[in-house]
Amino acid sequence: MSASVEGSATHATTFRTTRRNLEPVLLGTVGVLSLLAVWQLIARVSSIPRYFFPSPADVVRAGIELVQKGILPVYIADSLGRYLAGVSLGVSIGLILGLGIGMSPRLSRLLQPILNFFYAIVEVAWIPIFVIWWGYGLKTIVLALTYVVIFPVLFNTATAVRSTPRILINAVSSLGATRMQVLRQVILPGALPGIITGIRIGAGFAFRGLIFAEMVAAKTGVGYLILTSAANHATDRTIVGMIIIGLLWLMIDQLYLRPFEAATIERWGLVHDATE
Amino acid sequence: MRRNSTRAYIANLVASPGAIPFALLITAWILIPLFINVPPYALPKIEDVFGQVVLGIQDGSLPRDILDSLERLLLGFCIGNAFAIPLGIAIALNRRISCLLIPVLTFLQSIGGIAWVPLAVLWLGIGPGAVLFVIANQIFFSSVYNTVNGVRTIPLALHRAILCHGARGVQILSELVLPGALIQILVGLRTSMAYGWRALVAAEMIAGTNGIGFRMIEAVQWYQTDTVLIGMIVIGVIWVLMDWLVFSKLEQITVVRWGLLREVA
Image 1: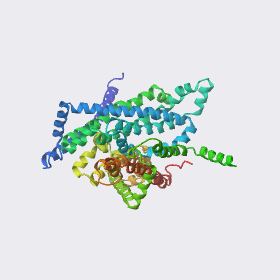
Image 2: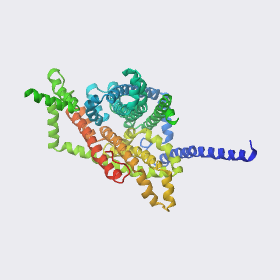
Image 3: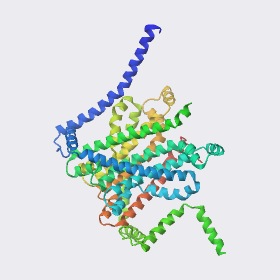
């Protein structure tokens, strides 16, 4: 401990680093607050009618009202239920197809062109015909979401499986591994980062798809809330719904998808091995 | 002899097996109405759909819808990127601007273009204005981050080098930032087009008065499934053409030519 000089130096650096860490937070808060202030000011000062441009205070009031009446919790639960069902179905199908196509060149030659063709017909374009086939409701929405998720998962999985080094597969096979063991011990762990990337892309498209599908084909849910509220000139409720949509996506992305990505990749030792 | 030609035929099919699923699909489409009693609104006959396409081309309604949609997409693309690219560069080059704007932008981006449709309709009325607002909004947010990333990944050494050589202001932009970030910006343009295309069709369905999306949702109300199917095929074909002709070509004439990305042989 060579006393004061070094001590003050470390003190200075920590001080500087905390300042540096604080600055983004401060500036970010300033950014958010000034947006809110300008919004409130315009809504107050101008003579724009409230239904056309509600103030932040109106939105907060509408939000509290929606929660008290119990509408918002039910709608959020409905939306999330549909989302979860569609995404899990899509991930399962996409994963199986992707593994198959990735491992078998013959299957890939057979299916790749038609899969590309269907991928180009975005899910938004399927919703009208789903409505004709199954009417408005759960089935249409869940299947539309499934459709969105399948392709990114499938393509990313297939690419990741294909890029598994041949030498690893040969090594494990020559040690006497069965095909199933090769799949579980080599191909799946190796393809995992690609698979997760696919799931993240698919989940992103699916969330947008959910909001759209609920606007067109549902009688509950956050997407339904924003469209009907706007039609009834309850614009404050529309904005509550939009904020909920933003928060839900941030939550899904930051709390589930990203940590999931980090956790699986680290746990399977893919990142650590690379650095060691 | 006959056996030989059959063999050649089969060999041909095996050589391009990708055609088989398409053939199966079309056969199923032709055969299903013959054996099972499907109402035409659930699955229109293939010849009816083609008849409808010919009719649409003859009276000019199909090309008009396509052009309306494409024009809107192009306009939204230009407006969105005209804001996104300069802002992205500013955010990447200045830490203060970045700290100030990133939280707000992240939140607005996570709302997503489609959720703006109800507000757009309220503010601008049902019609082209609302649809354009949604597309431009969507494309703006998809493009900003790619621009930021593109500029941020330019090696610091290059930045220092160009400063040492006395570059100032606009020179830094034109000699370092733009070419350096170009690959990522182009990736961003492409992704933003993918999101914008979805947003366009979605917005036209809810808030449109013309265009492909509008035509499809209008057809749903009258159970004109043939029109819906044509819309789907048109959407697929346009997307493939756009991605393939416009963006692959664009990449070739800029990035590859400037030697930033070696053409993969």
